[in-house]
Image 1 (cartoon, rainbow, N blue to C red):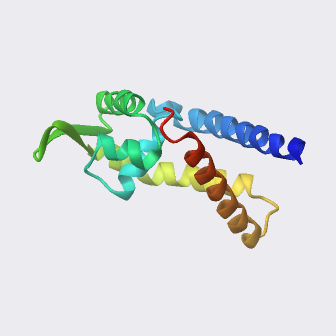
Image 2: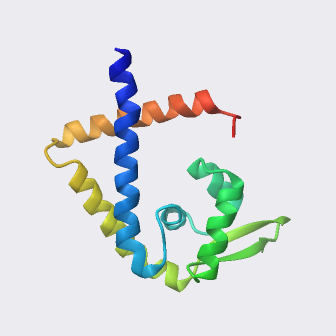
Length: 147
């Protein structure tokens, strides 16, 4: 069983790397990379949240979030403003340019999902998502506080 367990991480790693390559290729003309797109996607779900909340939502450390948001702001995809309730914090909102990317990014994500789930039934794909979510929660519980 140990070999099978080790290979799970290996294949997830390979899949993740291929996803990064795909996103970098598809987003290249927009100067967005695979480590930045996820912030836009999260803001599409809830715009106008703090950088800290973005970090929490995405399980990404605050320094990496700050770098990504600063770059997205420089490219005019997002805007940071001081939180009126906490002058130490920033609220992040999408700009018109950021909002215009929504359908493009969603289309690219849907295509990738269809590509990697080719040959799976809908039930198999749903089951796989649930299992990967469970594995992710197990990993987060194990690593909690180590970052």
